[in-house]
Amino acid sequence: MKSEHVGQLQRLQWAISHRIAVAGLLLALVFMQPVGAGTVGMIGSQSHVVLVMGDSLSAAHGLAESQGWVALTGERLAVSKPGWKIVNASISGETSAGGAARVVHELALNRPAVLVIELGSNDALRGLPLQQMRINLARMIGAAQGVHAKVLLIGMRMPPNYGAAYTREFEQSFHDLARQLNVTLLPFLLEPIALDRNAFQDDDLHPVASAEPKLRDHVWQALAPLLK
Image (cartoon, rainbow, N blue to C red; front, side):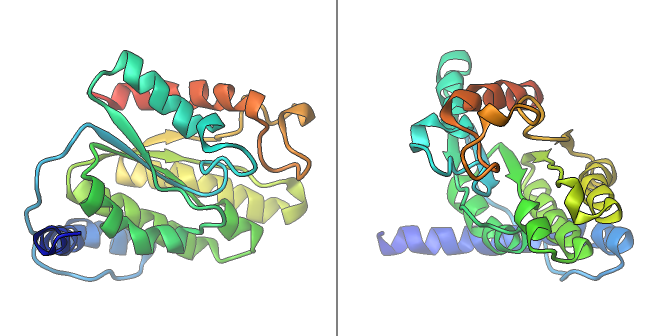
């Protein structure tokens, strides 16, 4: 990468980091934990990009990347929304902390008009504190809103063996974030296939290729209104 491009990217990252301060007071009030303050900066114009930051469910774990719902959504964008494209920045095993750590770089690099966040499942699978998950996701939302990107928050559910209180709080966390931070919510990514054992790979966690179009269609219902 040329030095001038590196410098530009660093300036954009700095600007986005400071724009998170716009959401700082709200996040502190909602979650009772302060976030850093700073001066609101300016960044370059947005492009017609949908940026997806998720975990293995969005990274097409066990499949070819082209078979995943994100890539399939990109194909639909090319046909129905010419000029738009999708960037998949999902990482298998990613937690909300990882997403929060990467979001500034990804926003600066891609300048999306829409950020899709599909994170939190690995927090729950590891039994991590849900309050910290909410704070991490709120920071990602605040970073996107600070640069005027729309946000689609995709929720998940945990199996009942994690305990009724924990699973209930986990699911409710996405609803609370969407309401408090005024973002679009898709409550449960796997809703169209959750009851179909044949829709999952041998690990009982990740969808098979034939199920991915159903996830694309499910996500599209929430995503399409944001592509304006």
